[in-house]
Structure formats: C-alpha cells, structure tokens
Amino acid sequence: QLQLVESGGGSVQAGGSLRLSCAASGRTLNQYDMGWFRQAPGHEREFVAAINWITRTGYRGYYTDSVRGRFTISTDNTRNTMYLQMNNLKPEDTAVYLCAADLQRGSYYDAPGYAYWGQGTQVTVSS
Image 1 (spheres, one colour):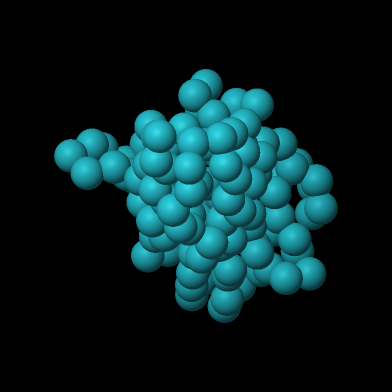
Image 2: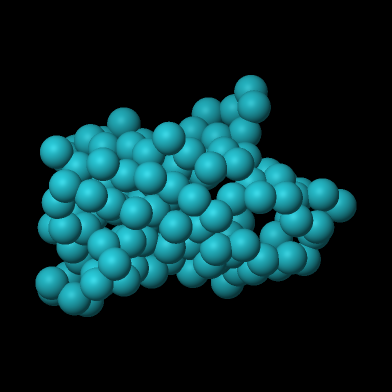
C-alpha cells in the first residue's frame, strides 16, 4: 500500500513561488507514474504536471499549457518524495493541489486513472 502526504502549500502574492512536496511511504516512488492535480472550488480536478518513468532514475515530465515554463515537477528518490516547484504564481493558480501515483488506466492527465491520492495542500495566490 502506498501513502502520499502533500505539504508546502500556503498564501503568496502574485509573482511569488512555492515548492510543494509529496512524500511517499509504503512503496518506492520510482515504481509509479505520478502526477500533480489541482481543484478549485466549483471546478473539476485539473491536471497540472506528471512524471513518466523511462528508466529507474530517468523520467519525462509533462505539463498543462497554463503552467509550462513556470512549474517544474521533479523527484528525489533518496527521500522518496516528488516535488512541484511553482514560480511566477498567478491568482488563477489558487486551488487545492493533490499528488497522485500509480497510473493504472488512461493517460497521465486523466485523474480517475490514478490509484493513490494524497489529501491535498491549499495554495492561495493574491493579486
């Protein structure tokens, strides 16, 4: 069983930065394709970024268009943790951010395809 715990959310002004962490326990992360999603009030869960493992240590990152060039997804296998570095934040980035692991069906941007989810961390960006 894989457990995921997010942290690093908070409140920042537009243009600021945050780094979200997704700490895994129970299994090693590089066994799984993983992703970050976000959900704002009244909106559906939205794909943000994903990792697709090519080798045991190398991966390819994918991003939704609205965050490409501002957000960077990465992992630290020694800490069994995935990160989302978010720079130049905008008010429209405000949402609960959730990490997901073990893509079992569909594409990396399909939330229902992931088997494991964290509880989420709130990101609020003020203008």
